[in-house]
Image (cartoon, rainbow, N blue to C red; front, side, top):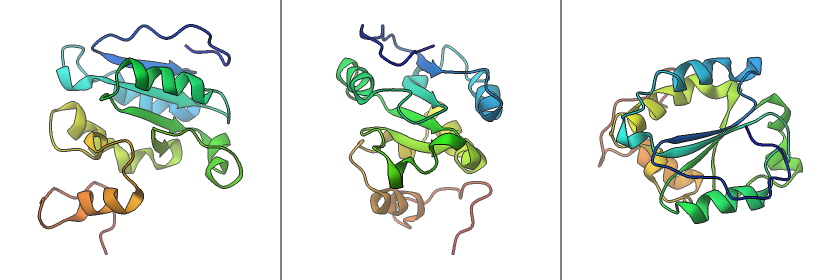
Amino acid sequence: MVESGLQNPPHIDSTMNLFGLTHRAEFREVMEFLNTVPPSNVRAECSVLLQSYPFEFPQKFVNMLINAEPLLPVILVAGAGCEGEVRTGRPLQGVFRIYASQWTAYRNELERFFNGGDSVFLLPRTAGNDEIAVFLFSPVCPRQPLKDTVVL
C-alpha cells in the first residue's frame, strides 16, 4: 500500500500494480473483481490506484508510474470522498478515473481489458470524454454494450 509522500519510485513489473487502502468497504466489489484476474494474464499490465480521499496520491507519484511504464494505463478508482474533486480540487492527471459508486458500469470494460479485448483503457491517456464516447458507441467499431449502461 502507498502512503502519501512516497519518496522512492515504485517497483514496476509486468503484472497489475495495486496501490491504496484495499480493506475499505467502498472498494470491496473492486477487490473481489481484481482478485479474479489470473496472474498469468499478460493484459493485466496496469496500475490501479484505490483513492479514498483527495490528495492521497500526489501527482508526483502518478508521474513516476507513467514514467516507469508510459504505455501502461493507470486506473484510478475514486472513493466517495473524491467525488467532488474534479470540480473543487486538483484531480490527478494522466489517469482513467472511475468512481467506486459507478463500479458496476465499468466492470465489464475492465473485464474486456484483462481478457485482451478492445477496451477504453487502451486509448491514449490524453483521450477526452468525447473520444471515449466515440470509442464506446461508434458503429465503426461495434462492441457489446456495457451491462447497466443505458444507450440513448
